[in-house]
Length: 479
Image: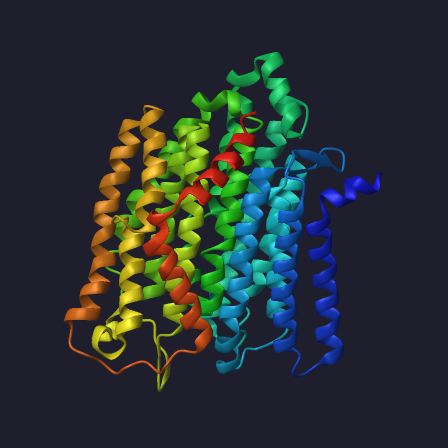
């Protein structure tokens, strides 16, 4: 195999080597290695992002067609890598304070991120599964990382059992697709369908439905969302922040690549399943969050709803729809990171608090923090001119142009319902009687909040760079 073939996968190879080096470093250094390993992990992830950006940007495959790099993959990888690096930075202070600062944590996130990169570049059903499992196994351990907490252990076990079930469904779907198309490689599947007219084959359609089921679990779309609220609430907050950002990006990237490339000519046959999953996610995400008292559970239902909105773009099955998803995911990750930076700052003298009622009077005691949280809540609700509005605008316009009018209308109505629980948080902060104030947050959290807030507010001033990059990335899939 030529050296050039390895250079195509250089960011992944670097991250794999870095994870092993960091693991050995932590073991040999012993106690007190966590801080150093954490910062080296952040540096490794950011260097991998730099390697991705330095790539040619052309569509190239290696490892006998298993692995593919292109502008779409580069876009999603950089987004996932940045989200992972921020998750490690946000975890340091929390883990140290809660006495769970062990060097394995950043190493697990690096390995999970490596799995995400393999998922994003998967060009074959086999590499797709390998990437998913590499990510998932790391996430199972990360979920149960707080070993002395019953809640975290229960969350990790629940995530593992349901994850194993989804992996089984995914594999079954892959085996059916292989059986009816005769290959596992995306381009060859597309060629097989074009030649043999296998698009109407019932066995193949059943395989596609099982594939959707397996991938829907990874992005916590309805009806495979049941693990999300319990896991988000049970795991340590930095882990929740990580789960809500990077794996969602990788999961949606895989969703897009696995359906647009091999099954692009069968949009009419899988579109209705995606439409159902999208509507169910948007509606459940809007209504189930209304009575939530715990802010992490509320964010879990919020993430289910937002995945529903992102799937609107996939249901459109067009270049415009994919561009909408890329813009949406970028904005969503930045809003989410900012929101979780505030949730991580919800700390009183007795320790961390998660009840929404504890935000009462925040507008008086911490006016800047309250203002930023209000910006994020309004943006998540899709209120213009904040960034969240533009994310929804592009996916809904793609649905309208694809003549999916009912889907766009249901999405808009779900947004209106969802706005209720976001605005309720603003009402509690500014109009309820003041409760015990929060302990001042550290400078890192303040910086993350500030940058996220500035992006959310000022996105409409100059959206061109993101829109042009997303359009170029989406165009690659339809060449």
